[in-house]
Length: 306
Image 1 (cartoon, helix red, strand yellow):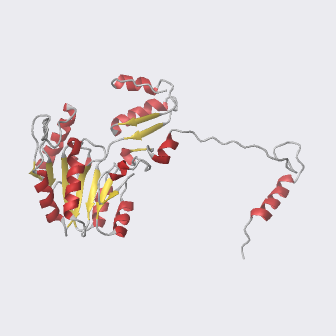
Image 2 (cartoon, helix red, strand yellow):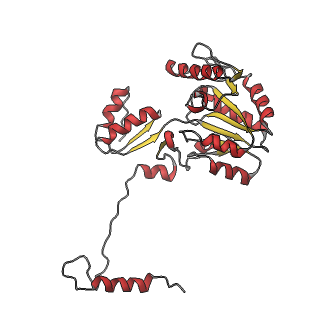
Image 3 (cartoon, rainbow, N blue to C red):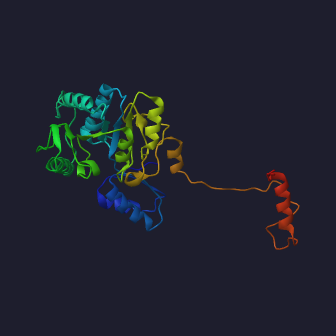
Protein backbone atom coordinates (compact mmCIF):
# COMPACT_ATOMS: atom_id res chain seq x y z
CA UNK A 1 0.00 0.00 0.00
CA UNK A 2 1.28 3.46 -0.89
CA UNK A 3 0.18 6.59 0.91
CA UNK A 4 1.25 10.10 -0.02
CA UNK A 5 1.17 12.77 2.68
CA UNK A 6 2.33 16.30 1.97
CA UNK A 7 3.19 19.01 4.44
CA UNK A 8 5.93 20.98 6.11
CA UNK A 9 8.18 20.31 9.06
CA UNK A 10 5.34 19.39 11.40
CA UNK A 11 4.20 16.66 9.02
CA UNK A 12 7.70 15.23 8.83
CA UNK A 13 8.09 15.32 12.60
CA UNK A 14 4.80 13.45 13.01
CA UNK A 15 5.88 10.84 10.49
CA UNK A 16 9.05 10.02 12.41
CA UNK A 17 6.94 9.23 15.49
CA UNK A 18 4.09 7.46 13.68
CA UNK A 19 5.36 3.92 14.23
CA UNK A 20 6.85 3.43 10.77
CA UNK A 21 9.45 0.71 10.26
CA UNK A 22 12.03 2.94 8.57
CA UNK A 23 12.48 6.54 7.46
CA UNK A 24 14.29 7.44 4.23
CA UNK A 25 15.17 11.13 4.25
CA UNK A 26 16.37 13.36 1.41
CA UNK A 27 17.42 16.89 2.29
CA UNK A 28 20.10 18.89 4.04
CA UNK A 29 22.51 17.45 6.59
CA UNK A 30 21.18 19.93 9.15
CA UNK A 31 17.60 18.71 8.83
CA UNK A 32 18.81 15.12 8.56
CA UNK A 33 20.33 15.35 12.03
CA UNK A 34 16.99 16.49 13.43
CA UNK A 35 15.20 13.62 11.69
CA UNK A 36 17.71 11.15 13.12
CA UNK A 37 17.26 12.56 16.62
CA UNK A 38 13.48 12.20 16.37
CA UNK A 39 13.73 8.65 15.02
CA UNK A 40 16.16 7.71 17.80
CA UNK A 41 13.38 8.16 20.37
CA UNK A 42 11.79 4.92 19.15
CA UNK A 43 14.89 3.35 17.56
CA UNK A 44 13.44 3.77 14.08
CA UNK A 45 16.19 3.04 11.51
CA UNK A 46 16.92 5.77 9.00
CA UNK A 47 18.47 6.25 5.57
CA UNK A 48 20.04 9.63 4.95
CA UNK A 49 20.49 11.11 1.46
CA UNK A 50 21.79 14.57 2.25
CA UNK A 51 23.62 17.31 0.42
CA UNK A 52 26.84 17.33 -1.55
CA UNK A 53 29.71 19.46 -2.71
CA UNK A 54 30.71 17.34 -5.65
CA UNK A 55 34.04 17.95 -7.33
CA UNK A 56 35.41 17.26 -10.79
CA UNK A 57 39.09 16.49 -11.35
CA UNK A 58 40.51 17.36 -14.77
CA UNK A 59 43.84 15.59 -15.25
CA UNK A 60 46.75 16.45 -17.55
CA UNK A 61 45.59 14.28 -20.46
CA UNK A 62 41.87 15.04 -20.26
CA UNK A 63 39.71 15.95 -23.26
CA UNK A 64 39.33 19.58 -22.21
CA UNK A 65 36.31 20.27 -24.42
CA UNK A 66 34.42 17.27 -23.11
CA UNK A 67 35.36 18.12 -19.52
CA UNK A 68 34.20 21.74 -19.87
CA UNK A 69 30.93 20.68 -21.48
CA UNK A 70 30.28 18.14 -18.71
CA UNK A 71 31.24 20.59 -15.96
CA UNK A 72 28.83 23.17 -17.35
CA UNK A 73 25.97 20.72 -17.43
CA UNK A 74 26.82 19.32 -14.01
CA UNK A 75 26.97 22.79 -12.48
CA UNK A 76 24.20 24.68 -14.26
CA UNK A 77 21.49 22.22 -15.30
CA UNK A 78 18.31 22.55 -13.29
CA UNK A 79 19.65 25.89 -12.13
CA UNK A 80 22.35 24.07 -10.18
CA UNK A 81 19.68 22.55 -7.97
CA UNK A 82 20.88 18.96 -8.25
CA UNK A 83 22.25 17.10 -5.26
CA UNK A 84 24.93 15.44 -7.39
CA UNK A 85 25.72 18.59 -9.37
CA UNK A 86 29.32 19.69 -9.88
CA UNK A 87 30.14 22.62 -7.58
CA UNK A 88 33.97 22.49 -7.65
CA UNK A 89 36.49 21.80 -10.39
CA UNK A 90 40.18 21.11 -9.81
CA UNK A 91 42.15 21.33 -13.06
CA UNK A 92 45.86 20.59 -13.29
CA UNK A 93 48.40 23.15 -14.50
CA UNK A 94 48.64 21.42 -17.86
CA UNK A 95 44.98 22.01 -18.76
CA UNK A 96 43.77 24.78 -16.45
CA UNK A 97 43.96 27.71 -18.88
CA UNK A 98 42.41 25.80 -21.76
CA UNK A 99 39.69 24.41 -19.50
CA UNK A 100 38.77 27.85 -18.14
CA UNK A 101 38.57 29.26 -21.70
CA UNK A 102 36.30 26.44 -22.83
CA UNK A 103 34.08 26.61 -19.77
CA UNK A 104 33.81 30.40 -19.86
CA UNK A 105 32.93 30.44 -23.55
CA UNK A 106 30.22 27.83 -23.08
CA UNK A 107 28.84 29.43 -19.91
CA UNK A 108 28.40 32.79 -21.63
CA UNK A 109 26.00 31.19 -24.08
CA UNK A 110 23.61 30.13 -21.34
CA UNK A 111 20.71 32.23 -20.16
CA UNK A 112 18.24 31.53 -17.37
CA UNK A 113 14.59 32.33 -17.85
CA UNK A 114 11.04 31.04 -18.19
CA UNK A 115 10.83 31.01 -21.98
CA UNK A 116 11.50 28.16 -24.37
CA UNK A 117 14.95 29.47 -25.27
CA UNK A 118 16.21 29.61 -21.68
CA UNK A 119 18.85 27.08 -20.60
CA UNK A 120 17.39 26.67 -17.11
CA UNK A 121 14.75 28.17 -14.87
CA UNK A 122 14.59 30.05 -11.56
CA UNK A 123 15.63 29.09 -8.08
CA UNK A 124 12.79 27.12 -6.54
CA UNK A 125 13.01 28.82 -3.15
CA UNK A 126 13.85 32.46 -2.32
CA UNK A 127 15.90 31.32 0.67
CA UNK A 128 18.16 29.23 -1.58
CA UNK A 129 18.69 32.18 -3.91
CA UNK A 130 19.92 34.10 -0.86
CA UNK A 131 22.41 31.29 -0.11
CA UNK A 132 23.76 31.43 -3.65
CA UNK A 133 24.17 35.21 -3.56
CA UNK A 134 25.90 35.00 -0.18
CA UNK A 135 28.37 32.39 -1.41
CA UNK A 136 29.17 34.38 -4.54
CA UNK A 137 29.48 37.67 -2.64
CA UNK A 138 31.79 36.18 -0.02
CA UNK A 139 33.93 34.55 -2.71
CA UNK A 140 34.37 37.88 -4.48
CA UNK A 141 35.13 39.68 -1.23
CA UNK A 142 37.81 37.07 -0.49
CA UNK A 143 39.63 37.76 -3.75
CA UNK A 144 37.79 35.49 -6.13
CA UNK A 145 36.86 36.53 -9.68
CA UNK A 146 33.61 35.93 -11.54
CA UNK A 147 34.51 35.43 -15.20
CA UNK A 148 30.82 34.91 -15.96
CA UNK A 149 27.76 35.93 -13.98
CA UNK A 150 28.00 37.18 -10.46
CA UNK A 151 25.61 38.06 -7.70
CA UNK A 152 22.34 39.52 -9.00
CA UNK A 153 18.89 40.09 -7.57
CA UNK A 154 15.89 38.02 -8.51
CA UNK A 155 15.13 34.32 -8.85
CA UNK A 156 16.99 33.94 -12.17
CA UNK A 157 20.66 33.65 -11.30
CA UNK A 158 23.05 33.74 -14.29
CA UNK A 159 25.63 30.98 -14.79
CA UNK A 160 28.53 31.96 -12.56
CA UNK A 161 32.08 30.69 -12.97
CA UNK A 162 34.36 31.66 -10.09
CA UNK A 163 38.17 31.61 -10.16
CA UNK A 164 40.81 32.15 -7.47
CA UNK A 165 38.39 31.41 -4.65
CA UNK A 166 40.15 30.51 -1.36
CA UNK A 167 39.54 26.96 -0.18
CA UNK A 168 38.11 28.19 3.12
CA UNK A 169 35.37 30.21 1.38
CA UNK A 170 31.75 29.10 1.71
CA UNK A 171 31.57 28.71 -2.07
CA UNK A 172 34.09 25.87 -1.73
CA UNK A 173 33.19 24.45 1.69
CA UNK A 174 29.38 24.62 1.84
CA UNK A 175 26.69 23.30 -0.47
CA UNK A 176 25.63 26.14 -2.77
CA UNK A 177 22.87 24.35 -4.73
CA UNK A 178 22.77 26.99 -7.43
CA UNK A 179 24.16 27.73 -10.93
CA UNK A 180 27.73 28.40 -9.79
CA UNK A 181 31.03 26.54 -9.98
CA UNK A 182 34.51 27.26 -8.67
CA UNK A 183 37.55 26.34 -10.76
CA UNK A 184 40.89 25.94 -9.02
CA UNK A 185 44.36 25.37 -10.46
CA UNK A 186 46.34 22.51 -8.89
CA UNK A 187 49.83 21.18 -9.71
CA UNK A 188 48.63 17.62 -10.25
CA UNK A 189 45.71 15.25 -9.79
CA UNK A 190 47.03 14.04 -6.46
CA UNK A 191 46.61 17.54 -5.05
CA UNK A 192 43.18 17.65 -6.67
CA UNK A 193 42.21 14.49 -4.80
CA UNK A 194 43.47 15.93 -1.53
CA UNK A 195 41.37 19.07 -1.94
CA UNK A 196 38.39 17.10 -3.19
CA UNK A 197 38.41 15.01 -0.03
CA UNK A 198 38.97 17.95 2.34
CA UNK A 199 35.27 18.45 2.95
CA UNK A 200 32.56 17.08 5.20
CA UNK A 201 30.57 15.98 2.16
CA UNK A 202 31.06 12.91 0.03
CA UNK A 203 28.17 12.29 -2.36
CA UNK A 204 29.34 12.09 -5.98
CA UNK A 205 32.11 13.33 -8.21
CA UNK A 206 33.75 13.10 -11.62
CA UNK A 207 37.18 12.45 -13.11
CA UNK A 208 38.34 13.35 -16.62
CA UNK A 209 41.36 11.59 -18.07
CA UNK A 210 42.11 9.62 -21.24
CA UNK A 211 43.78 6.84 -19.23
CA UNK A 212 41.45 4.06 -18.12
CA UNK A 213 43.81 2.95 -15.35
CA UNK A 214 44.35 6.52 -14.17
CA UNK A 215 40.63 7.17 -14.17
CA UNK A 216 39.95 4.17 -11.96
CA UNK A 217 42.81 5.14 -9.63
CA UNK A 218 41.51 8.68 -9.13
CA UNK A 219 37.88 7.58 -8.87
CA UNK A 220 38.75 5.14 -6.09
CA UNK A 221 40.79 7.79 -4.29
CA UNK A 222 37.88 10.24 -4.17
CA UNK A 223 36.01 10.10 -0.85
CA UNK A 224 32.55 9.79 -2.34
CA UNK A 225 29.75 7.31 -2.61
CA UNK A 226 29.71 7.60 -6.42
CA UNK A 227 32.09 8.78 -9.13
CA UNK A 228 31.78 9.10 -12.91
CA UNK A 229 34.78 8.84 -15.24
CA UNK A 230 34.68 11.11 -18.32
CA UNK A 231 31.06 12.03 -17.65
CA UNK A 232 28.93 13.62 -14.93
CA UNK A 233 26.11 12.08 -12.88
CA UNK A 234 26.24 8.96 -15.08
CA UNK A 235 26.01 6.73 -12.00
CA UNK A 236 22.44 7.93 -11.45
CA UNK A 237 21.39 6.62 -14.88
CA UNK A 238 22.26 3.01 -14.03
CA UNK A 239 19.43 1.57 -11.89
CA UNK A 240 21.54 -1.35 -10.70
CA UNK A 241 24.16 0.88 -9.07
CA UNK A 242 23.79 1.92 -5.41
CA UNK A 243 23.11 5.62 -4.88
CA UNK A 244 24.26 7.38 -1.72
CA UNK A 245 27.11 9.16 -0.01
CA UNK A 246 29.39 9.34 3.00
CA UNK A 247 30.06 11.94 5.68
CA UNK A 248 27.58 14.82 5.74
CA UNK A 249 26.15 13.49 2.49
CA UNK A 250 24.51 10.76 4.52
CA UNK A 251 24.56 6.98 4.71
CA UNK A 252 22.60 4.06 3.36
CA UNK A 253 21.87 3.36 -0.28
CA UNK A 254 18.96 3.46 -2.69
CA UNK A 255 18.82 1.73 -6.11
CA UNK A 256 20.28 -1.63 -7.00
CA UNK A 257 20.64 -4.67 -4.78
CA UNK A 258 22.05 -2.56 -1.95
CA UNK A 259 19.05 -0.25 -2.14
CA UNK A 260 16.60 -3.14 -1.96
CA UNK A 261 18.39 -4.57 1.06
CA UNK A 262 18.11 -1.20 2.81
CA UNK A 263 14.34 -1.72 2.98
CA UNK A 264 14.49 -5.37 3.97
CA UNK A 265 15.36 -7.00 7.27
CA UNK A 266 17.81 -9.85 7.54
CA UNK A 267 16.51 -12.81 9.55
CA UNK A 268 18.27 -16.04 10.47
CA UNK A 269 16.40 -19.38 10.78
CA UNK A 270 17.93 -22.76 11.61
CA UNK A 271 16.25 -26.16 11.23
CA UNK A 272 17.59 -29.38 12.66
CA UNK A 273 17.80 -31.84 9.79
CA UNK A 274 19.03 -34.86 11.77
CA UNK A 275 19.81 -35.83 15.33
CA UNK A 276 23.29 -35.28 16.71
CA UNK A 277 25.18 -37.94 18.63
CA UNK A 278 25.97 -35.33 21.26
CA UNK A 279 23.47 -32.66 22.32
CA UNK A 280 25.40 -29.62 23.48
CA UNK A 281 22.43 -27.36 24.24
CA UNK A 282 21.22 -29.44 27.16
CA UNK A 283 22.05 -29.73 30.84
CA UNK A 284 22.02 -33.53 30.38
CA UNK A 285 25.07 -33.54 28.14
CA UNK A 286 27.95 -35.72 29.23
CA UNK A 287 31.15 -34.22 30.68
CA UNK A 288 33.72 -33.60 27.96
CA UNK A 289 31.12 -33.60 25.17
CA UNK A 290 32.11 -30.15 24.00
CA UNK A 291 35.78 -31.10 23.86
CA UNK A 292 34.98 -34.22 21.85
CA UNK A 293 32.91 -32.28 19.36
CA UNK A 294 35.65 -29.65 19.02
CA UNK A 295 38.14 -32.38 18.11
CA UNK A 296 35.80 -33.80 15.47
CA UNK A 297 35.22 -30.34 13.96
CA UNK A 298 38.96 -29.74 13.95
CA UNK A 299 39.59 -32.99 12.10
CA UNK A 300 36.95 -32.20 9.49
CA UNK A 301 37.46 -28.48 8.97
CA UNK A 302 40.85 -27.69 10.50
CA UNK A 303 43.80 -26.64 8.40
CA UNK A 304 47.09 -28.38 8.98
CA UNK A 305 50.14 -26.14 8.86
CA UNK A 306 53.52 -27.59 7.90
